[in-house]
Length: 266
Ligand SMILES: CC(C)(COP(=O)(O)OP(=O)(O)OC[C@H]1O[C@@H](n2cnc3c(N)ncnc32)[C@H](O)[C@@H]1OP(=O)(O)O)[C@@H](O)C(=O)NCCC(=O)NCCS
Image 1: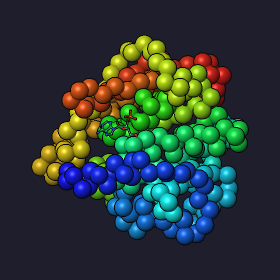
Image 2: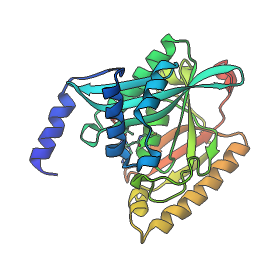
Image 3: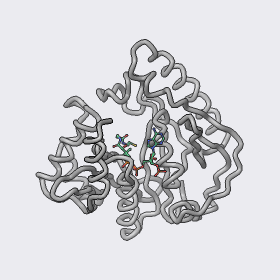
Image 4: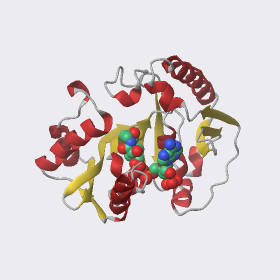
């Protein structure tokens, strides 16, 4: 990376980034532009500005990260309902490439949590691609989400180059906002877990997905891990931890997770 570019990133890291709700059509339009820049979606997959407006008006969330007047990241959630309970389903989290790895993604999630708690929610859910090591680390290790549901090809085909043409398999993240696990992890305490099984994703996965010559390796790994997750979840195991090793490989740690620990519904 050039020194000039590196300096620009350092400056942005140190810049004061404010997080606040987005409210105007111009701001929602900016989220559409950010979707294009972050995911590279075609028109059919883009969430239009009116849906952001509706999310904001019906009890969801649209939070933006501002560098000055410019929105450089956002989180969007819709209200959900299951088994007599309301919860939030966070549909999108995006940070512009130049602003990544400076804690902004985590700050957006924490702002979502704060707003959700004020409004009385116990649970926020979202889905994520289990082949994305960075996202899994953020969701499980840094935020304290757990996972015990796997959906094969959740969205159907995706126009995003990030998906590399693979089926859109997703894990559900369940973020039990008031649970001891989440409060401990957010306050930096180690959460003791008993690991019964592991599912690994090698760091080469992103290259495999992008290169047509190696894409079949990514497809094989996705299929193998899909079976491992489905089998583990059927046997009552949950993802309760995540580890990265020095090579950058990521490993899901599976064990028992009891709802009684938090007095929660699921
Ligand atoms: C996911 C995303 C929002 C995260 O935003 P961000 O501002 O970079 O996130 P943060 O800086 O708060 O956290 C990133 C974490 O991942 C880690 N990380 C970075 N690169 C990594 C990699 N290749 N492998 C594993 N972990 C990695 C960082 O070290 C950091 O962890 P730490 O706080 O323990 O050091 C951003 O990368 C993005 O917009 N990605 C594209 C869209 C997307 O995938 N959205 C999420 C859908 S669920």
